[in-house]
Image (cartoon, rainbow, N blue to C red; front, side, top):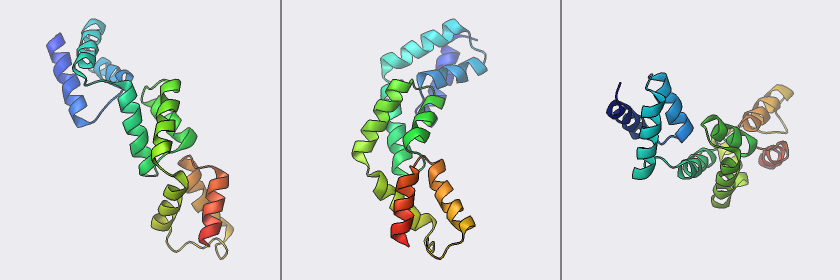
Length: 152
């Protein structure tokens, strides 16, 4: 396979959604392009501005946090899974936190996802289900408890 085929494959992948450099490298490796073609392709994508790990990390962190899908450690792990180094992932998390109120997101998500939930009248199983739902997304136990008790 040639370098132009690697570039075409990279552009198709980037057209679907933004990707980290490491994620794109892995996708191209799985398509069995040579390391030389991959390196040239990644360099060209960086030159054209199609590939920027810092921008990708910040956009992804904003998206996951704004949707309430990940915050805190969960968000860091998600960014690292996508090939973002830890320092850059932490920086992206802090940037996203300045733009979004995590407690506000938590209470909004609680109202949308569990509108009928009342902590006081819920049994232990229902309480665990709701609390674990938010903790799996990276919200702290303290914040979750404050939000669910305030709702009820």
